[in-house]
Length: 246
Image 1 (cartoon, rainbow, N blue to C red):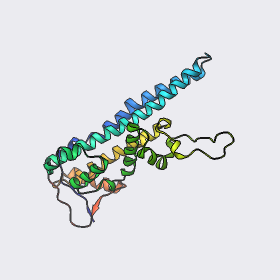
Image 2 (tube, rainbow, N blue to C red):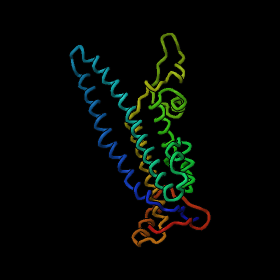
Image 3 (cartoon, one colour):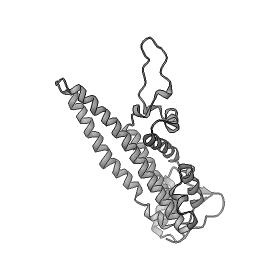
Image 4 (spheres, rainbow, N blue to C red):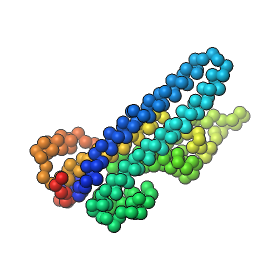
């Protein structure tokens, strides 16, 4: 089995910082903002003022909505990164795919374009499951209740708190009562999505390095170490796919 290789593009170079960008957004924007709201909720919980309980409830609502907004932001950053990457690849490899085919493609279309431009399915990446879930979450956060939200209730029931039965009713509420407005996106969930985005771009960088024809000895050594440590090694059954010098 030979390492999978694609035709390298400048878009691969331009994407080299995408993993760091999304991780910085989490660590420097999301976490501090949510921590600030958490502290305010704790302060109000300790207050003996009669109005504090009402303000605390309001801040809890703000916290929930802020988490939903950040989930949408993470998904939007990821989608812009991927769409920009595909635009760059198309510009070099298949200019006829520019314009509406890349700019207007939905998630299914982007997956098809990725396979067409890079010779490997997006589904093959280990991070795909999380990224696919992130797409559903982004759709639900953007559009509200609908098909994406319904799929999320099956795939990620932890996004909603358990609903206790009503008085004199032993049966729990049906899943379709789990609305987007009731969703609780944890920091751990957001971190998992950010890690999946970073993992995808790191995998793309690995393929880029494997696809360089004339490798510097230091890169050869680096790849040898990386192959022994990686969880995923995309491979092909035949000879190496054609790459190019970068």
